[in-house]
Length: 448
Image (cartoon, rainbow, N blue to C red):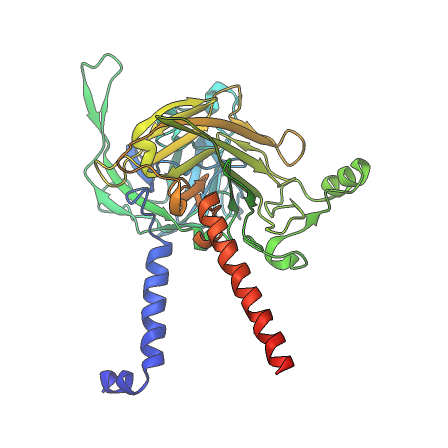
């Protein structure tokens, strides 16, 4: 009966198909299909009424990192557990602990939220891999700093495998939404090797939680766009209009600042907005994006060609530390030299080397300043030509896709790409001829 209904209502069928494919594609990143953040919960010791556990977060995403102000991890207790003490992290609220006398728990909430501590806290509040202000780098960029950890002592949980219940409803904010966490799953206990590598111990109990990212859940609009230009065409193809929203729609894009305003007015507008607000305060542009990436084909040699890449920050509220750019182009298998950026090849399709991770040089340009005169970074790339595939025709020399800090940037439509002079002139002549022929036909018709 259901299929009979669909047969007579094809619009319903189309809607269901669209919903299915839209949801699945937005949550899946083809350039990092296995990327996730894994939360590992290791019970390392039993206590009279519970246990001591080390919670470790590993960012297994190749190029998506967690910037300041950092992550916050939440869950719901399965019973009436409390947190007696914490090291390397803290809960945002203590909750109602009025039923306790003498020693007061660190947190009595049934749904605690934990945040990282900042660097420089006393040593007795630290454990390994803690205290980074909630910042996690991407796995491909800096795997040593792609991990964070804290320790907690849990009470009212029971002190055996039979009495412990796994927490539920895990949430991960970074600092806004975007991540969806699955249920906690029991796994093989983690094994630990002592510093002298002569002894191996293991956790008493271990469970994992996997959190995956969706750009669609993170924000309603894109966060970056791409502009294109070339030496062989005077036209600069800008970011598509309203790529990240339109001026006048502050509910969608946040506020914007007129770049022609005086410096004092600009400073007062920026300072009047809340510093902890993550909503972009961008320069007023036709695209309204916080970030613009400009790909310029600069020079053509006999055996090589050269590209200039410029990243501009239009957001007055956000500096980007440890930024990165992912670019997909078939000529990255013959990248000869890159100037002032770091480069790492990532191969989402196995042996096909067409995707590059670009990021700043530490202490030189790994910090992208907020909007202003120095709110940009740039580099040049030198490619060796593969004479069997290389061409400037049909937009081949422009990237297939670009991500900034893990978010897909809006590309101009292919028919707007800069054309080669001979192709463009042919189009102009044919269009001019068409217009002239139409005018002659109108004039002849009027005199007849």
